[in-house]
Image (cartoon, rainbow, N blue to C red; front, side, top):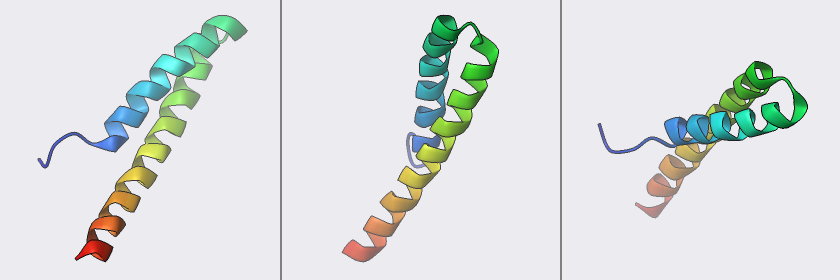
Length: 58
């Protein structure tokens, strides 16, 4: 493994934000699931951009 993955970081941050939003709106599970999905997608995009940047630098 090359180190920490942005996908896991995004998903973790999504859970935390989702739980906070869920507490405020009353739908903790739904908000947490949406947060994980959004965070993971953003993490995937960050990984892709990072690899693209590495290839352009070489």
